[in-house]
Image 1 (cartoon, one colour):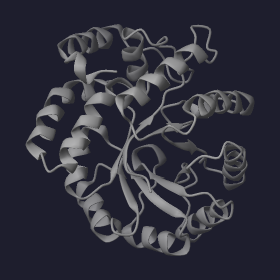
Image 2 (spheres, rainbow, N blue to C red):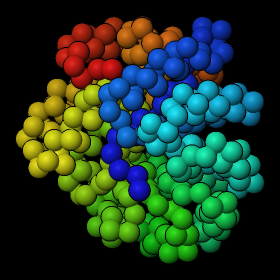
Image 3 (cartoon, helix red, strand yellow):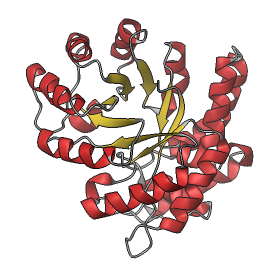
Length: 294
């Protein structure tokens, strides 16, 4: 159901911190022109945690209208509160997305029964779910047996966005569940490794800047042209790494500003990228083939 390249879209802000709808329009068009299969709105990269309900709805109205079903849309709705997640999900469903992205609840450290019930209640809304597993941000690492129970109890979970860096654990999960769900890479720098364990695609923050690179990598891989996929990956890799010099999406937004798409403004508690890091990122950007960039 969810295959290919999905860009976890940033929310462009003006220097005053308001949503920059002109830059959002430009970014969406460049993503679609690059050949992505879908866009993720209001995810972590979008800084959704710092946006109020009115802003979220305004952004969704504008983005969904512009996308106009040309690519699939996934909307991030997950929080560490089931009631709030349900509220967010109901609001998202008014825009008829192809799926909703629901992160494992952070901070609370829910036990297995709580996790199952959390996703069961979201599934009652009737929309396909992408379970988002990112232990580095949530402090919660899902054992394979717990994930198995969740998938068994909640069949509306159609995909897992996997952002764990424990490749042994990731491989265990992929082997057990890749024939049951779409297994999506959540770590841009490990995309080839994930493809080698049969993942169906990626939800990528770096694709905001490098959508053409990710699309070409995936196209070559699907054709069995693994060496060509690796060649493009090696060309893109330095800038992929540069996207994470500081906390996402600060560097991605800085790079987009260098490509004349919006400003590098982020909302507190995120701050501006350090000047020295900006200079390092500029060097890598200048060395990257323009054909790999949006």
